[in-house]
Structure formats: structure tokens, C-alpha cells
Image 1 (cartoon, rainbow, N blue to C red):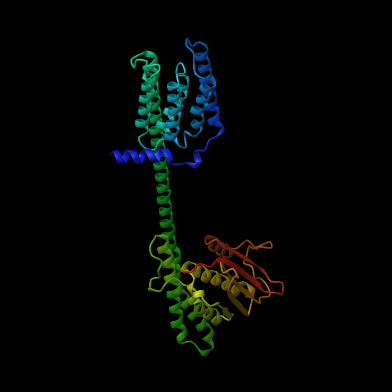
Image 2 (cartoon, helix red, strand yellow):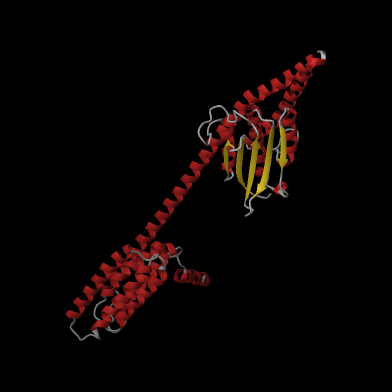
Length: 407
């Protein structure tokens, strides 16, 4: 018990709080109170019935009791010890009255208000010291005298009120934190409910539509099986449609699981697409008539899955726009790492001759189009950026800068 009390006392003496450094407000509080104490000292010296020690020493002791109070919020216990030491020295030196004790009100209030632990106990101990000092020589006043006991009780009441104010402040702060946590929890629930609603809508609309596409493509292929040989192009197109639908279904289910807060993994057990699937993606576009060249740097496979997924989706969207709008015959996908090694630069350039921008785009940045907007949102979610626009020598360029984050 004694050891714990000593540890807490040491914390109060030497612990620091940089946020509570002395301010102009502290000076406005301590200064007038010190001036009032000096006036009391002057009155007691002026009307004293017996000679006093060196008068300037009384004012110096007032200053010695007042200056530490500027740090009362930072080191309340040390401040109280120094203030009470100056008041006690004033009395023991034989000066009349106890005018500097008025400064002890601030010291007792600081103990109750700013001590993290046992502030009320320290305040009551300060009251006991201030009560006992007048009973010491040379004045030796009785403890029950009103001019001794009443000021002492006032010091104790100050400590009690300050401690009560501290408790109310802590309870208020705790209530604010609880309300903030509850508000955040309510917001999280609303977001989760909205994500579930979006997932249901996507499932009911998009997933159903893709399933119908897959089924109808099978029906068309069965019908084309008995068709003349000159329908090979149509058969090949339907095969591509069926393959795209089959690939989109598991990825859509993975997106729905992500909205529902489940693990991000497609239905057939394959991971979310990354750099390893870029070759397969390029083959799909080659089958559609777009010559795609991939240029990947060494070590790119070590990128985090989220960065790889973002790269895959940006490349997928950029090549889709090229195939649909640019009338291009060739596209080059290049991944490079900056010299500093902190960023990944993705470039998707084509040799298209017109209509490269999606419908609705405009201006030099071509900010329209949901595909480009989606690419930008994906990049910005990782702290990156995307730029798209025509190249000086013809064709269209999509360039993304993403953080190089290893898994």
C-alpha cells in the first residue's frame, strides 16, 4: 500500500504533459492572485505590532509560491509541494499573518482537478498542512481558532469541488466516446444493410441476365451444330459469348460475396484474378481480333493481391474500351516500376484511329464514361491515379500509377 502511494506520488511529481504548458490564461489567473497576496503582505507588514524580518523577503516568498502555479496543470503535485513550501517558509521566518496562503487555493484546485489518481487525497493533505502551519512557532496559533480553521476548511472544500469537477468531466468525455462509438456502429450497420441490398439487386438483375446469356448461347451453339460450314464465324462468336459468360458468373459471385462481407474467392475455388491471369485475358482479346502484347517486369508477381486485382481490372476495362471504340488492331500493356521503387506504372496503349473515348467523354481528360470512372475509383482507393487520353502520334493511352505494395 505504501509502495503504491509512493509510486503515484512520484508520477505526480515528475510526469509531464506537453499539451498543458503554461499559457497566457495561466498568467492572467496567477498574476492577479499573486498581486492580491502581495497586497495582503503589505497590509500585514504595515499594521504589524512587532518588528518583522527583512520585508523584501516576504514579497520574494510570494513570488516563490506563485511562479510554480503556472505549471499547475502540467505537474500539479510538484506545484503544490513548492507552493506549500514557500508558504511554510513565510510563516517559519516570522512574517506576520499568512497572506501567501491565498495562492494555495490554486494549488489545492490543481490537485483535485489535474492529478490522475488520488487527487482528492493530495488536496486534503495540503489542507492539513495549511491547517497545521499556523500552529508552528513563532506564532503558535490554536488550531481551533476561526482565523486558522476556516481558511483550512476552505482549502479542503476547493480540493473537493475540483475533484468533483474532474469526475464530471471524465464522465462527460466517456459519454461522448460511447455516443461516438454507438454512432459509428449504427453507420456500420446501415452500410452493411445497404451493401446487402446492392448485392441482392445485383444478384437478381445481373447474375440472372448473365445466366440467361450462358443458357441461350448453348442453345444457339446446338442450333449452329447442324448449320452449313459458312456459319463458322457465328459459331466462334457464340463460343466466345459462352466463355465470357461462364467466366463472368464466378467473378460476379465473388463480388457479391465481397459486398456481403464474405471471403473474396470465386465459386470454383480460383482466386481473384491478378497478374497471373493477364495472359489468359490477352488470349481472349486476341480471339476477338485485337493483338495484345504484354510487358511485365520481374518481381511483379510479388505484388499484393489487391494491387494485382486492380491492375487486372484496369487492363480488362481499357482493352474492352479499345475493342469497342478505338477500331484498333494492336494494344500494348506495359508494367514498369519507378526508379524510387515506390510506384507501379501501368500503360495500355493502342493504335486506334478514332472513337477511342467512351460515349459521353469530353475535354482533355475525358472524364465521362462509367468505365473510366470505375478505373479511377479503383486506383484512388489504393492512393493511385489514372489518366486517359489520345496519344500525340495517334492511338489511345490509359496510364495508371499505383503504389508498389508487396504481399
